[in-house]
Length: 153
Image (cartoon, rainbow, N blue to C red):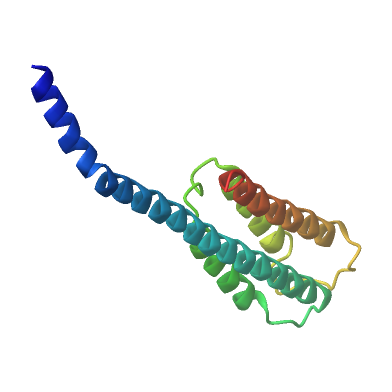
């Protein structure tokens, strides 16, 4: 019985380098996949933040000029932003990212948005300040999601 144990142990030891190579390959591949996913999500978050800033600038220009025709572009940009946000795994009903997006959208398209009788408003108005606050909350939510997801990588 001891001879059989010694033989099977010797055979197992002969496969150890192969097993260690496979485990090492798996670990390196796993870490590379994590790093690539982190890069992709960093790019997605950065692009989304840039879009949010562009939208808020368009909204400010729209509300300051009663003759502005930026409303369709603002709505299209908000729709495109949501499509990008849908690529984030945690973007779902009730999640803070979704809530931040909805608040930002409501601030951008609220008030006299698309009203034919709207008057230009000052940059310091409550409506513009609300857009800025919800914009900042959305930017913060995007960074919060990224840092929570990749804090250990």
